[in-house]
Image (cartoon, rainbow, N blue to C red; front, side, top):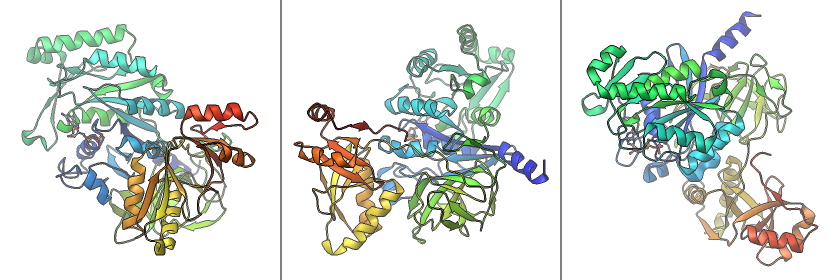
Length: 528
Ligand code: GDP
């Protein structure tokens, strides 16, 4: 093996590329900050938090995000800790932006799934567990907000098992019920890790390790209860098994209170030890691209306007194989066209640092990425195309037009760009004038982003009229007239060339199907 290959494999093995995901409000931003604080990337927790009235977070960048206190777009943060390199790929916080979240999941090797101890499994949690299982992404479940009254720990485990079919395997066990959080039992060593708040709670929690004897002397019954519960877990088969975790048959469970920085040290340790490093990724034909093959990457997100001073488009790509050197001229698999990477950057929230080289698992931001789209594969030397990123069936439809008809050009440009970024899907119907496309979204919040960006970024305020449609099915082009002839239904062509039949609801689609047995309606499933 050449020295270069050895270096590359070593660099890949040091990487942990993951996302923190959850139902909104479970504490994703807080936990991400706590991780950075713990790894000494930040000096003070809270210094980067972006919720209303507080200082801006590293991962918030749009004005709108600040206004609304939600995180809409994705960025990546890299930090090193104990000789390992962690890439945290940030995910949007709002339930409506699930499509974005799913794209991010194509860029990571594992996830941290947060549960709110008082809420347990929530709708978005269920969806995310499902997608991770489907995509083969191992899950570390963190039960957060243990400092607040919530469910019983054993009941939470049962809920996880029942709702996901995955065996929960705790590596720490809370000492003290939810709302009375003193520390955790480290299940594998049997030790007690005691947490103490620092005054004000804004700096690292104080962690003290004790032997079981010391713990019993300090905590009495609270400790013995935790030990008894942990023994029950073993009897019930809730024991950690690496193979099962990697195959999503089980999920590792930890307890934490992100806001107090409790449990964060254990989380970092577990990530270091168990989260898988990058591995050979299968291409569209299922053949794995070895890590040591020449550079390849997949774009998972395209964004504009991250930096108000440099209006440009930034494509985020995850490196799948090889080494990346700034300045490489890479090929875009979809078009065969070349892309100069003179302005590649590593991304740390809103601050961009120019990077010189990057390795498998790393996320690079390519500035001036032209017409690159989410899902595109990039490579050097040996061509490769990675599987398409799944898209989701839109359920919300609006007719769009420029408020000021003289701004038509800006309007077109803006719509086209938002389409390419995947912010919305753009449909054209023969029944409507060409300057009035239909915008389709998975969640209605997407339209607010469109309105905001059309006005502020493209200077073409937009009028959106709600359409009485709620379901899109795939059809063949020749069936479009039959759809248009059916009352209330409409045929439209998506910008990727797919023809869609738009219906009010599934009832209408079914009636249509009965009257038109020759027309095949295809459901727009998650994967292409
Ligand atoms: P996100 O929407 O998932 O990013 O959630 P945030 O990190 O913004 O947290 C949502 C709310 O929960 C905020 O008010 C946080 O301060 C609070 N929070 C987060 N973690 C904890 C925790 O461990 N304990 C308590 N009590 N509150 C928390």
